[in-house]
Length: 309
Image (cartoon, rainbow, N blue to C red; front, side, top):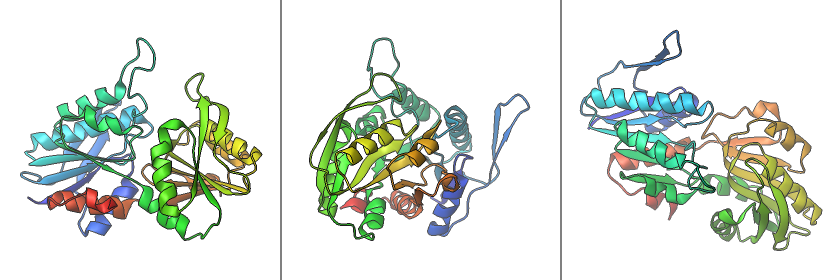
Protein backbone atom coordinates (compact mmCIF):
# COMPACT_ATOMS: atom_id res chain seq x y z
CA UNK A 1 0.00 0.00 0.00
CA UNK A 2 1.10 3.52 -0.73
CA UNK A 3 1.33 5.93 2.22
CA UNK A 4 -0.90 9.00 1.92
CA UNK A 5 -1.01 11.89 4.42
CA UNK A 6 -4.01 14.21 4.25
CA UNK A 7 -4.44 17.36 6.31
CA UNK A 8 -7.61 19.11 7.36
CA UNK A 9 -7.69 22.80 8.20
CA UNK A 10 -7.42 22.40 12.00
CA UNK A 11 -3.60 22.26 12.22
CA UNK A 12 -2.03 22.24 8.79
CA UNK A 13 1.33 23.44 10.11
CA UNK A 14 1.66 20.28 12.23
CA UNK A 15 0.77 18.13 9.21
CA UNK A 16 3.49 19.87 7.18
CA UNK A 17 6.04 19.13 9.92
CA UNK A 18 4.98 15.48 10.00
CA UNK A 19 5.38 14.91 6.25
CA UNK A 20 8.75 16.65 6.42
CA UNK A 21 9.90 14.04 8.95
CA UNK A 22 8.40 11.23 6.85
CA UNK A 23 9.95 12.45 3.60
CA UNK A 24 6.64 12.49 1.72
CA UNK A 25 4.29 15.16 0.40
CA UNK A 26 0.80 16.01 1.59
CA UNK A 27 -1.92 14.47 -0.52
CA UNK A 28 -3.91 17.14 -2.31
CA UNK A 29 -7.31 17.50 -0.65
CA UNK A 30 -9.43 20.53 -1.50
CA UNK A 31 -11.65 21.62 1.41
CA UNK A 32 -14.01 24.47 0.67
CA UNK A 33 -17.30 25.90 1.92
CA UNK A 34 -20.54 26.49 0.07
CA UNK A 35 -22.00 29.95 0.54
CA UNK A 36 -24.25 28.67 3.34
CA UNK A 37 -21.29 27.19 5.23
CA UNK A 38 -21.61 23.55 4.18
CA UNK A 39 -18.26 21.78 3.85
CA UNK A 40 -17.21 20.62 0.39
CA UNK A 41 -14.34 18.13 -0.01
CA UNK A 42 -12.55 16.73 -3.04
CA UNK A 43 -9.56 14.39 -2.87
CA UNK A 44 -7.59 15.59 -5.88
CA UNK A 45 -4.99 12.78 -5.84
CA UNK A 46 -5.56 9.07 -6.44
CA UNK A 47 -5.89 7.16 -3.13
CA UNK A 48 -7.24 3.84 -4.42
CA UNK A 49 -5.74 1.02 -2.36
CA UNK A 50 -3.70 3.48 -0.27
CA UNK A 51 -2.98 3.60 3.47
CA UNK A 52 -4.41 7.03 4.34
CA UNK A 53 -3.74 9.10 7.46
CA UNK A 54 -5.91 12.19 7.97
CA UNK A 55 -4.40 14.66 10.46
CA UNK A 56 -7.11 16.70 12.16
CA UNK A 57 -7.29 17.63 15.85
CA UNK A 58 -10.89 18.41 16.76
CA UNK A 59 -9.99 21.70 18.42
CA UNK A 60 -11.91 24.99 18.30
CA UNK A 61 -14.14 25.46 16.45
CA UNK A 62 -14.67 21.82 17.45
CA UNK A 63 -17.88 21.23 15.52
CA UNK A 64 -16.42 22.62 12.26
CA UNK A 65 -13.25 20.57 12.52
CA UNK A 66 -15.06 17.39 13.55
CA UNK A 67 -17.50 17.65 10.64
CA UNK A 68 -14.61 18.37 8.27
CA UNK A 69 -12.83 15.23 9.50
CA UNK A 70 -15.92 13.07 9.01
CA UNK A 71 -16.47 14.35 5.46
CA UNK A 72 -12.83 13.86 4.46
CA UNK A 73 -12.95 10.28 5.82
CA UNK A 74 -16.14 9.59 3.87
CA UNK A 75 -14.51 10.97 0.71
CA UNK A 76 -11.50 8.69 1.23
CA UNK A 77 -13.71 5.65 1.78
CA UNK A 78 -15.69 6.37 -1.39
CA UNK A 79 -12.39 6.81 -3.24
CA UNK A 80 -11.47 3.18 -2.40
CA UNK A 81 -8.76 3.88 0.19
CA UNK A 82 -7.56 0.55 1.62
CA UNK A 83 -7.23 1.83 5.21
CA UNK A 84 -8.15 5.15 6.85
CA UNK A 85 -6.45 6.23 10.07
CA UNK A 86 -7.80 9.31 11.83
CA UNK A 87 -4.87 11.11 13.48
CA UNK A 88 -6.34 13.22 16.28
CA UNK A 89 -3.49 14.79 18.27
CA UNK A 90 -6.28 16.33 20.37
CA UNK A 91 -9.53 14.40 20.85
CA UNK A 92 -12.26 17.01 21.28
CA UNK A 93 -15.29 16.19 23.44
CA UNK A 94 -13.02 13.88 25.46
CA UNK A 95 -14.09 15.53 28.73
CA UNK A 96 -17.64 14.25 28.25
CA UNK A 97 -16.66 10.63 28.86
CA UNK A 98 -19.27 9.59 31.46
CA UNK A 99 -22.64 10.49 32.95
CA UNK A 100 -21.53 12.77 35.77
CA UNK A 101 -25.13 13.80 36.46
CA UNK A 102 -28.62 12.77 35.26
CA UNK A 103 -29.76 13.42 31.67
CA UNK A 104 -26.39 14.29 30.13
CA UNK A 105 -24.80 12.67 27.05
CA UNK A 106 -21.57 10.70 26.76
CA UNK A 107 -20.34 12.74 23.82
CA UNK A 108 -16.90 11.14 23.68
CA UNK A 109 -18.64 7.87 22.77
CA UNK A 110 -20.88 9.63 20.22
CA UNK A 111 -17.80 11.05 18.48
CA UNK A 112 -16.25 7.57 18.42
CA UNK A 113 -19.39 6.20 16.75
CA UNK A 114 -19.36 9.01 14.18
CA UNK A 115 -15.73 8.35 13.27
CA UNK A 116 -16.35 4.63 12.73
CA UNK A 117 -19.50 5.40 10.70
CA UNK A 118 -17.50 7.73 8.43
CA UNK A 119 -15.15 4.90 7.45
CA UNK A 120 -12.27 5.24 9.91
CA UNK A 121 -10.55 1.90 10.46
CA UNK A 122 -7.96 3.04 13.02
CA UNK A 123 -7.40 5.99 15.39
CA UNK A 124 -4.10 7.56 16.42
CA UNK A 125 -4.41 10.05 19.26
CA UNK A 126 -2.43 11.55 22.14
CA UNK A 127 -3.04 12.11 25.86
CA UNK A 128 -6.75 11.40 26.01
CA UNK A 129 -8.57 13.11 28.87
CA UNK A 130 -9.49 9.62 30.13
CA UNK A 131 -7.73 6.46 29.00
CA UNK A 132 -10.96 4.47 28.94
CA UNK A 133 -12.09 6.44 25.87
CA UNK A 134 -10.04 3.90 23.91
CA UNK A 135 -12.72 1.37 24.83
CA UNK A 136 -15.41 3.49 23.17
CA UNK A 137 -14.06 2.30 19.80
CA UNK A 138 -14.55 -1.12 18.22
CA UNK A 139 -11.50 -0.44 16.03
CA UNK A 140 -7.79 -0.28 16.99
CA UNK A 141 -6.69 2.84 18.89
CA UNK A 142 -3.05 3.84 19.26
CA UNK A 143 -2.73 6.12 22.29
CA UNK A 144 0.45 8.22 22.39
CA UNK A 145 1.85 10.16 25.34
CA UNK A 146 3.47 13.58 25.21
CA UNK A 147 5.58 12.73 28.27
CA UNK A 148 8.85 12.02 26.37
CA UNK A 149 8.65 15.45 24.72
CA UNK A 150 8.14 17.19 28.08
CA UNK A 151 10.76 15.10 29.87
CA UNK A 152 13.47 16.00 27.37
CA UNK A 153 12.71 19.72 27.67
CA UNK A 154 12.43 19.77 31.48
CA UNK A 155 15.49 17.56 32.06
CA UNK A 156 17.57 20.01 30.00
CA UNK A 157 16.71 22.77 32.49
CA UNK A 158 18.56 20.92 35.30
CA UNK A 159 16.14 22.15 37.97
CA UNK A 160 16.72 21.02 41.57
CA UNK A 161 14.25 19.98 44.29
CA UNK A 162 11.45 19.20 41.86
CA UNK A 163 7.94 18.23 42.86
CA UNK A 164 5.40 17.13 40.25
CA UNK A 165 1.89 18.27 41.13
CA UNK A 166 -1.31 16.63 39.90
CA UNK A 167 -4.14 19.23 39.89
CA UNK A 168 -6.69 16.48 40.66
CA UNK A 169 -6.93 12.86 41.72
CA UNK A 170 -7.60 11.74 38.13
CA UNK A 171 -4.13 12.79 36.98
CA UNK A 172 -2.17 11.04 39.73
CA UNK A 173 -1.02 8.13 37.55
CA UNK A 174 0.32 10.54 34.91
CA UNK A 175 2.08 12.68 37.54
CA UNK A 176 3.56 9.65 39.31
CA UNK A 177 5.11 8.34 36.08
CA UNK A 178 6.47 11.80 35.32
CA UNK A 179 7.95 12.17 38.81
CA UNK A 180 9.58 8.74 38.57
CA UNK A 181 11.42 9.64 35.35
CA UNK A 182 12.68 12.92 36.85
CA UNK A 183 13.45 11.44 40.28
CA UNK A 184 11.13 14.08 41.73
CA UNK A 185 8.62 14.18 44.59
CA UNK A 186 4.87 13.95 44.03
CA UNK A 187 2.02 16.13 45.32
CA UNK A 188 -1.72 15.94 44.70
CA UNK A 189 -4.33 18.69 44.90
CA UNK A 190 -7.76 17.74 46.20
CA UNK A 191 -10.30 20.00 44.53
CA UNK A 192 -14.04 20.22 44.12
CA UNK A 193 -15.61 21.49 40.90
CA UNK A 194 -18.96 23.22 41.63
CA UNK A 195 -19.74 23.74 37.94
CA UNK A 196 -17.97 23.31 34.54
CA UNK A 197 -14.74 25.32 34.12
CA UNK A 198 -14.74 26.31 37.81
CA UNK A 199 -12.71 24.75 40.59
CA UNK A 200 -12.43 25.28 44.33
CA UNK A 201 -9.05 24.28 45.76
CA UNK A 202 -9.43 22.28 48.96
CA UNK A 203 -6.14 20.74 50.08
CA UNK A 204 -2.59 19.88 49.00
CA UNK A 205 -1.37 16.36 49.71
CA UNK A 206 2.42 16.27 49.73
CA UNK A 207 5.29 18.64 50.48
CA UNK A 208 5.89 21.61 48.15
CA UNK A 209 7.61 24.08 50.50
CA UNK A 210 11.01 25.18 49.22
CA UNK A 211 10.63 23.25 45.97
CA UNK A 212 10.19 23.94 42.26
CA UNK A 213 6.69 22.74 41.40
CA UNK A 214 5.62 21.54 37.95
CA UNK A 215 1.85 21.29 37.51
CA UNK A 216 1.05 18.44 35.12
CA UNK A 217 -2.26 18.04 33.28
CA UNK A 218 -3.58 16.73 29.97
CA UNK A 219 -5.04 20.09 28.88
CA UNK A 220 -5.45 23.70 29.89
CA UNK A 221 -8.72 25.30 28.79
CA UNK A 222 -9.84 28.44 30.62
CA UNK A 223 -6.84 28.06 32.99
CA UNK A 224 -9.13 28.61 35.99
CA UNK A 225 -8.12 25.37 37.70
CA UNK A 226 -4.47 25.64 36.75
CA UNK A 227 -3.99 29.19 38.04
CA UNK A 228 -5.87 28.48 41.29
CA UNK A 229 -3.69 25.42 41.89
CA UNK A 230 -0.59 27.49 41.10
CA UNK A 231 -1.63 30.17 43.62
CA UNK A 232 -2.28 27.51 46.27
CA UNK A 233 1.07 25.81 45.65
CA UNK A 234 2.83 29.17 45.88
CA UNK A 235 1.02 29.96 49.14
CA UNK A 236 2.20 26.61 50.49
CA UNK A 237 5.81 27.72 50.03
CA UNK A 238 6.88 26.59 46.54
CA UNK A 239 9.81 28.67 45.26
CA UNK A 240 8.88 28.39 41.58
CA UNK A 241 5.78 27.18 39.75
CA UNK A 242 5.75 25.88 36.16
CA UNK A 243 3.04 24.00 34.28
CA UNK A 244 3.11 21.35 31.54
CA UNK A 245 -0.11 20.52 29.65
CA UNK A 246 -0.27 18.47 26.47
CA UNK A 247 -3.13 20.41 24.88
CA UNK A 248 -3.20 24.21 25.02
CA UNK A 249 -6.89 24.89 24.43
CA UNK A 250 -6.59 28.32 26.09
CA UNK A 251 -10.14 29.58 25.64
CA UNK A 252 -11.86 32.59 27.20
CA UNK A 253 -9.70 34.57 29.60
CA UNK A 254 -7.00 31.86 29.83
CA UNK A 255 -4.11 34.04 28.63
CA UNK A 256 -4.99 36.86 31.04
CA UNK A 257 -5.25 34.41 33.95
CA UNK A 258 -1.87 32.88 33.14
CA UNK A 259 -0.28 36.33 32.87
CA UNK A 260 -1.58 37.30 36.30
CA UNK A 261 -0.75 33.95 37.94
CA UNK A 262 2.44 32.78 39.72
CA UNK A 263 3.12 30.38 36.80
CA UNK A 264 6.54 31.25 35.37
CA UNK A 265 6.22 29.11 32.26
CA UNK A 266 3.39 27.13 30.67
CA UNK A 267 4.72 24.33 28.46
CA UNK A 268 2.32 22.92 25.86
CA UNK A 269 2.60 20.92 22.64
CA UNK A 270 1.47 21.90 19.15
CA UNK A 271 -1.26 19.23 19.15
CA UNK A 272 -3.53 22.21 18.46
CA UNK A 273 -2.42 25.63 17.17
CA UNK A 274 -1.24 27.93 19.99
CA UNK A 275 -0.45 31.60 19.54
CA UNK A 276 2.51 31.90 21.92
CA UNK A 277 3.00 35.54 20.88
CA UNK A 278 0.13 36.58 23.17
CA UNK A 279 2.32 35.98 26.23
CA UNK A 280 5.99 35.26 26.85
CA UNK A 281 5.02 32.68 29.48
CA UNK A 282 4.03 30.02 26.93
CA UNK A 283 6.51 27.56 25.39
CA UNK A 284 5.28 25.33 22.55
CA UNK A 285 7.01 21.98 21.93
CA UNK A 286 6.51 20.08 18.69
CA UNK A 287 5.11 16.53 18.64
CA UNK A 288 5.67 16.15 14.88
CA UNK A 289 8.61 13.68 15.25
CA UNK A 290 6.57 11.55 17.68
CA UNK A 291 3.51 11.44 15.41
CA UNK A 292 5.65 10.84 12.32
CA UNK A 293 7.36 7.86 13.96
CA UNK A 294 3.99 6.44 15.09
CA UNK A 295 2.57 6.80 11.56
CA UNK A 296 5.64 5.09 10.11
CA UNK A 297 5.29 2.19 12.56
CA UNK A 298 1.58 1.76 11.83
CA UNK A 299 2.27 1.83 8.10
CA UNK A 300 4.94 -0.88 8.45
CA UNK A 301 2.86 -2.92 10.97
CA UNK A 302 5.41 -2.36 13.74
CA UNK A 303 4.89 -1.82 17.46
CA UNK A 304 3.78 1.65 18.52
CA UNK A 305 3.94 0.94 22.26
CA UNK A 306 7.69 0.30 21.87
CA UNK A 307 8.06 4.09 21.52
CA UNK A 308 7.44 4.43 25.27
CA UNK A 309 9.46 1.53 26.62
